[in-house]
Amino acid sequence: MIRTTLLTLATAVASFAADIPAIEYRVLATSKTSTMEKEMNEAAAQGFRFAAAMGGETAFGGKEAVVTMAKPAPGAAESAAWRYLLLATNRTSTMQKEIADAARQGYVYKGQTVFHSAFGGQEVAVILERDAANSTARDEYLLLATSKTSTMQKELSDAGRDGYELVGMTVGKTAMRGSEVLCILRRPAAR
Image (cartoon, rainbow, N blue to C red; front, side, top):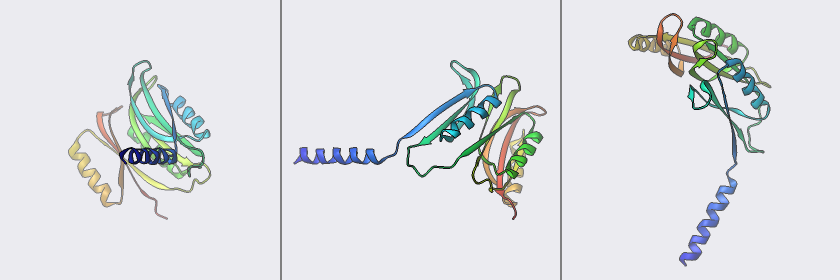
């Protein structure tokens, strides 16, 4: 009886595991933002989609950005052709303008990190994504940056009253003010 129950349970678990679609991952790492964007778009052309990002020091690569892309199993519902834009700067005003320009082209925020680039020093990097076949998404973005958390509290509260939702936050060094809390917020564009 116990042997039959265990065998039945093992068969059920094996059957359930066989129904779970496999996910393939690709890890990309580089110290150049232009190289990362190119590699992300090459992976996207092979069916991969952004999953996660982190900046830091790797054991063999030094200070670089690391991005993980994921590809669903063949036959999974995921089928869009994704395009990626990686924005990196140490000036918050430049980042605000670049995010707004990208949003007008249908890009949406996916993630952000801080990393040391080969040429730009410490930069905030923002990853944006769009469906190449459908670039109608139009959101408005607001970038808030300050060295004081009490100021950030006030600015976030004000932005929240205006309908902005926090989508990402990092602490990094900017060109003008040193270490700052950098928040990116989003709201649907007025139609």
